Image: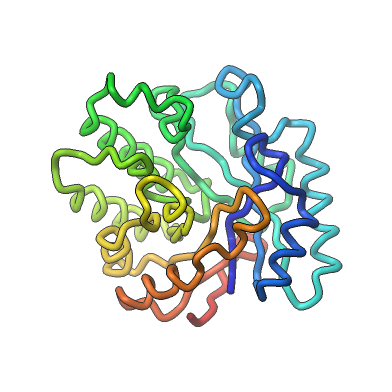
Length: 265
C-alpha cells in the first residue's frame, strides 16, 4: 500500500504531526508514505495561513520528515510538497521555493480560479454567481498549463473542480482527453486521489471516464489519500487499486529524488 499525498497541521487546515501519520501508516501496513505539505502561498491569498505552510515552517517540516524516515523501519517515508499553479502572481515563485528544499516529489494542483479558492466550503456561495461551464473550462485550461510547465512531477486530484457536484452542461470528455494528452506529452504523472470519496462528489479524483483517458494515453498514476488527519492515511486504498485495474493498469508509481519508481498493483 502506498500513500503519496498527506498533510499535517503545518498547513493550517489539517490535524496531527509527522509522527502521528507515521504511526498510523505503520499500523495499516503502508509501505510508502509521502508527506506533501502545501508550500507557502502569497499573503493576499492566505493571510491567516489556513491553506498552506508559513515560510518559516519549511525547514522544520523538512527536518521532521527526514528524521521520521530514519525510524520508520521498512516503510519508506518520503518528503514532498504540493504547490499551486499561480503563474500570474508576482509574489509566488514555485521554482525558487523548490531550490530551498531537497524533495522527492512535487505535486501540482489548481485550487484557485481568478483568485477564488473554489474548493473551500466556506466560499461555496460564489457558485451561485458564476457560469459553471466557464469554471470548468478555466480550471482545465489552468490544469493543462500547470502540466506543461515542467515544474511538477504529479498533477494532484486532477478533476477537483467537481468537488461540490457543480457539473458542466456539456460532456467533459474532451476536457479529460486533452488533459490526458497534455500529461502524456509532458511526462507528468496523474494522481488517483481517494479524497473525493470523502467529499460531496463521492467519487475518486479523477472520475472513471477521466481515468480511462489517462490509461489510453499511457499516463502513469500514483495513489494518494490527501489525508488531513492521521486516520485518513491509506483511505480507501482498495477502491483506488480496483479502479486502476478496471481500466487496465497493472502498476502504480511513486517518486524518490524526483525519479519515478514503479510498483505492481
